[in-house]
Amino acid sequence: MTTEPSRYHRRVAEEKRTAIIEAATGLFLEKGYGGASLARIAESAGVSKATLFKRFPTKAALFDAIVTEYWRPGGGERPEPDPGDLRAGLTGIGNGYADLLTRPGMVSLYRIVIAEAPRFPELGRAQFDLGKMPYFTSVRRYLEAARDTGTARFEDADTAATQFLGMIADYVLWPRMLLVDWSPSSGAVQRAVAEAVATMEARYGVRDAGREDAARR
Image (cartoon, rainbow, N blue to C red; front, side, top):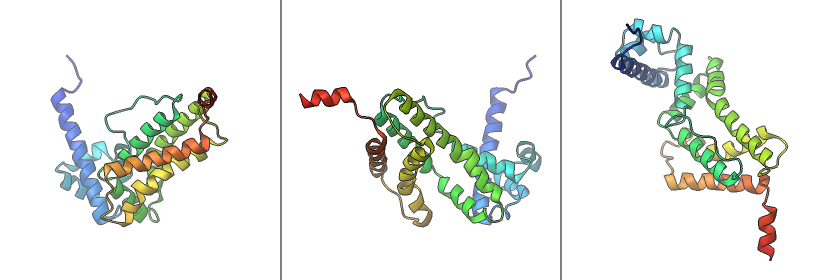
């Protein structure tokens, strides 16, 4: 006899988890991290306190799950971009990053962290370690692979990755933190990504010498 949960029970468990995370996010934003109790979150999510405590014994564990959820790429893990084509690779990465930053709830998550970090510095650490840092590491790893294949040249991969992600976030995310009506079109976001890619190519891209020789003939 199998002891694994049935498909139905797995679905119910996932639905409860989603309800808890959504309720917690809403209450954190409304009441502040310190003002939202686990009991109130359980009530808002429509689950028992025992169910919530079984999954998330502390608010810190719940917040960690929220951060991890929001920073997870849509559609599952994406294949590694080709380091031999810097423009295509950075465009794919940049569009993926823009998708993450414009995901519903991402701005709310940042606002919670900014508002509560002075009292609860662990929130900022969770946002950095569980959210931004894994994505940053994947970008840095791609750039290092591009350098190894000869399509990019730079001295500091951390600096290059920071510059690339910063150019995108400065247009896609940060204005939304202050301007409630800031909602650029998908075309505007894609143009911002394209400009960031072009800047990276101009600064760090290695030109194809063979192609240049052919163009001169």
